Figure (tube, rainbow, N blue to C red):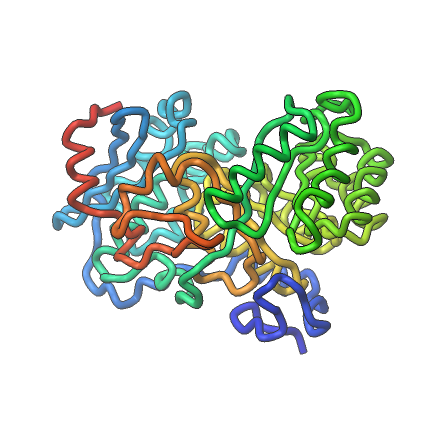
Length: 406
């Protein structure tokens, strides 16, 4: 009997797995990929969308939705809105106007085919859709008086452990150790991530010998208790990816992220099959069918959909449900800016969430928008518990009064 994706008692919350998972076939994966996620049945009256607008204040982009009865929802878009806003305004927003926000799940399918939007399928399209979805979920959560996690499956955890990450490739191993040490001192984290390779570089290292030196130096510097993650950003072909993966196995690293280019699915599976270290993959994936292929074929052990790149909470929840059927953990990729808030909400209700989520500098830039303000302490962040996205309504209104329409 296959485990139900809503009852993951076989999954340990530290990210390790028991033997009960993994028997699901294509039909079960397809059902999970098309499953109902949003639970808005307690909102009895229609929530007719009257307006959706994009606003800018001091480098932050906001998507504000309003209903005909005066309800409001606000989400924070990424900096990609600077160049994606024409697509958002011309192709995405008009479809939602006049629709009932309670039908959000169906609307996501509808906007994809509306005016042949599917011909633009990819990160740019789904980012725009994700911002509208987050704004409408915030509206529905405020109406229901619940955080978005309660609308999407039910909150099961309030605190989320994280790893600190460095995006550097131009540092020496010794310099990178210093960077990571400062991040650990600031946050109390028990896990780190660093970059290996040269980023989509066809096996070239960013600095000759840097990756190998950093892999071994990191374990010596931080000891056996540190959970170490390494990110290849598509740097390698399979033989070179395996070579570095063996080094990471030697030091007992936690997972190895995207060693091959993001669209090289078969090559990534080849690497996964050759290694024992868990492979993490999927940050730039936007296709539910390709996610299903990755899950069905064991091309990774950890899935990394991005909540914005992949189109939002509902689609990414479906990815997590497919992963759960195969006993796989999900550790979302984190877009910069406000993306950490979306990850915290996602982690609050997803049973098969990975042990650590990513912490980036956006906490300092946008934490004041939440109630209470977001803080990083002892390696944990708390998922916002207020209605919707948990924004501080007074603070957001103050910021939006000074914002300009895009």
